[in-house]
Amino acid sequence: MRHKFYEFIVKGVASGESGYLQVIGRCGDLPIRVDDCFDRLFCYKPRNYPQEAGRPPERCQEKQVALRVVCIHAYERSLPELGEGMTGSLALDGAGADQVAPGWILGKGQDFQPTS
Image (cartoon, rainbow, N blue to C red):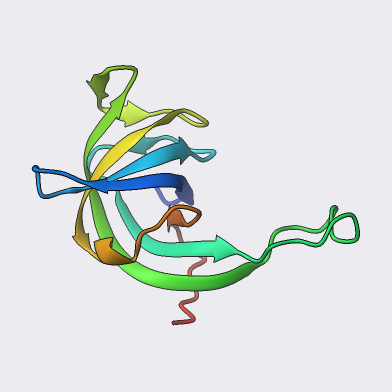
């Protein structure tokens, strides 16, 4: 089991006949594998440019979820893993699926401090 933070940036959301939540987006800095679980959903506060251009992003909202990756799809095929920076879709199952929306980030890691 990995203990580093991994994330998926959600660009689109769809529900289909499979009963799973389908999210379309991009993988962060670590690969995401089938059976990985996300435990949070968060978004960043918009920045004022150019004053805040060099500052690190600041989270404005965080929510707890429990979503497991059931299937990964990219490049017209199912994959066991979505590599860092790759775009694709994830089929997710679990609690909190109704809270996922474009612009939010699904994450898993040790630094989670729930605020809502």
